[in-house]
Amino acid sequence: MVRRNAEEVQGGGNDELFADDFVDHTPQPGRTPDKAGALELYKVLRAAFPDFHAVIHWQAAEGNLVTIYKTYHGTHEGEFFGIAPTGKAIRFETVDAMRVVDGRITEHWGVANLFSLMEQLGATPGGR
Image 1 (tube, rainbow, N blue to C red):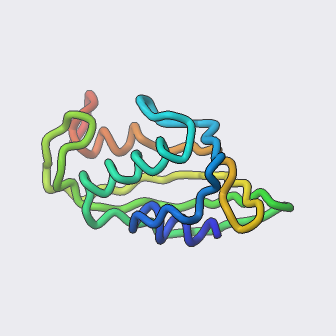
Image 2: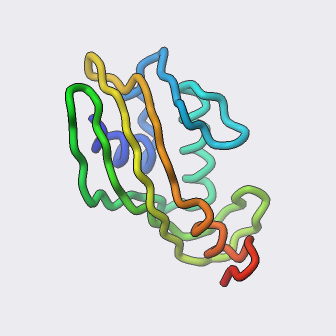
């Protein structure tokens, strides 16, 4: 289910994997901590990086909690947080933990290396 989320939801837009009462315990700035907020974030990412996809390095499960470590890749072809398209290839790492109940993702906690992403887009001091 968590692997399908990385491939089908984040990269493709399928929203059937989230429970209606989904809670994101670490929402991104400007996003609501619910299913709509998570899906909107993925929509923004796919608009900015049309080839947005994850390479999964590993995942582990304990009970109904699954942790996944992955690297996202994409090409910056649309506006992202006010940054005009650069055409640059980007990559950044993420660790997510997701609770799966009755075949649906019900909760999420995550940490993404967004500083690295912004640096790659030239939006931080020292950005390339």
